[in-house]
Length: 107
Image 1 (tube, rainbow, N blue to C red):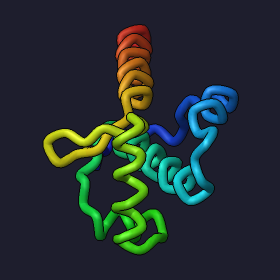
Image 2: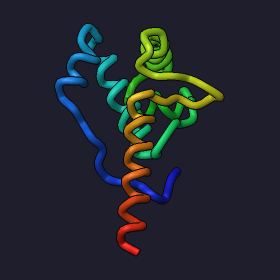
Image 3: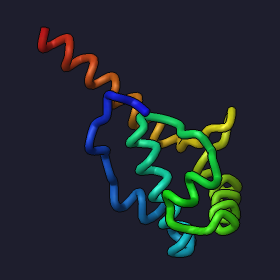
């Protein structure tokens, strides 16, 4: 976990709605929970089925089925035992860069 948590992240409703169109409510819910966790942790999170299924409020089998679909359609990425989202990665990097600039300006 990062000690440098920021309590907000950019949310673009039109982009989100276009991105989840065609997903079931359960898929959208798990995807949203995973995105929130990725933003909360400031980057990729460990892919631990029991922990993440509990976090998302679903059975492990359901979580695995849904994450398999999210992986197949490119909504999330699994690498080195960690899940991430390309858009979240870019937004987190922009946020970090903005914080560095603000920090330098404050000095």
